[in-house]
Each structure stands twice: as structure tokens, then as C-alpha cells.
Amino acid sequence: MEASAKILTLDNHACNGEWTIVLPRRGKQRRKFPKIRTLEQQLQPWVPTDLESDPNRQSKLIEKMQTCMKKVENSQFYLNLLEQIRTPEILDCFYRVLGSELKMPMVIYGIGSIESYETPRIQLSVAILMKKEFSWIGDIEVFDPVLSATESRVLEVLGCSVLSMNEHGRRRVTKPTIFYMPHCEAELYNNLLQANWGVDLLNCIVLFGNSFELYRYLSEFRNSTLVDSSRHIVAVREFTHEYVIKTISNDYFAAFHDSSWHFFSPVLETELQLFKN
Image (cartoon, rainbow, N blue to C red; front, top):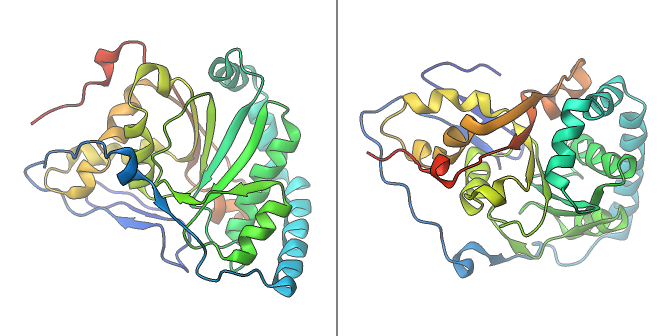
């Protein structure tokens, strides 16, 4: 991926076109950022467009996922990821977020179609394998509006639950939570941060997703709705500890390039004041 001061493109699964944004050229002014929506406005009931799971497709997809998980589990990429998590510095970050809790659930947004593309299968495999590896990772919840009934059923077979509401990334945490969001669009990250824009809430979040360092150019834009929809990403970098994921091979580049672990550590509410025009 290439980034410049003029344009930055972040693409999740280009084939389905669901999570792609292109940041326009800089302008001169910044619009006011919209207020946080009410709970009723945030949640939208969701059901797959195909209401019934296909048993044949289901069996084939389970086989694909099992094959993918085995491949990932034996890969050098995954072994390096586990080694990174187990380093004292990063492990301490996880334990700090965990606090007195025994487990932290994982919420997966924007995984894409695990039936149609290998990249989502790899991303999902890593999440499931991490849960198996670390006792402090709890239940996994998944949502993507492109998921079919067949994919939803397979996710359940794999031990995940599929959300019945489209939260648009606006999950307000009530306990320590991992948000697993590889290659999601900027607005989803921003929605999550905005919904949890408080010292206690941000300190309860671990975020796996696009490197926030990539958004450093956003502060140079002045006349874009995308600037407004990414203000919290830019602001949160002041108190973010970011650890870059090394892909090491082309097999895992598409799934995890420019990805990082993010841990947030604001101390005072005054640190969370956004710049105003």
C-alpha cells in the first residue's frame, strides 16, 4: 500500500468492494463533527439476504476453514504473531486492559465473505486460533453485512456468534474487549473510538486493525467529510501504543499488511478534547 500527503487508500477486500475508502485532496476548512447518535440510531436489525443455510455449501465451507486453520497454525507468520504477543511489553499491555477480569471477549467487524475469499478465511482463522491459544480471550462475536446464512451457520459451528444488529462499529464497551478489525474502513474505527471516547472506556479496549500511523496525513486535510469521520483516529494517536504486525511472506500480506495492535492509555478526560475550528 502506498500513502502520500495527497491521497491514502485503504482496502479490505477489493473484490467485494465493501470496505474501501479513498481520502481526497486537502481542502481549506473542516466541517463540524456530528454528535454521537442515540442508541436507537446506532443499531439496525440485520438478517442475511438468503434466509436459509445451504447444507452442501456449509460442508464445503467448513472443510475450507479447517484446511485454512491448519495452514495458518503451522505458518511462520502465526508463530511470529504468537511470539510477539508473548513479549513482556505487549503481554503487559493485554494484562493492563484485562485488569481483574479473567477473560476479554473478541468482537470481529468487517471480516468479509469467508466463503468467497481466502483473505477473510485467513483473518478469521487467526482470530479463532488466538482464542484457542490464550485462555484470557473469551467468546467471539462476528458481524459483516455481506455474510450469508450459510456463512453465519459455519461461524456458529466454529464457535463464534453472529450479531443480529448492525452496530456500525459503535459498540460501547462494558468490560475489557478486543476488537479485531483487520483492514476495515476508517469510519468503523472512528465510530468505535467515538462511542468510547472516555478515559475508562478507551483503557478497556484492545484494537487490532489498520495502523493508525497511516492516518497521520489526515491532519493535513481541511475540507473533507473523511477528515471529520476520522478525527478520533487522529486524536487518539497521542496516547496510543502501537505494535506493527510483521507479515514476512506474501501468503499473509493481503490479510495483514499495515496492521497493528493498538492499546490506548489516556489518563485525564482533558486529553480527549478534540480540536475545534
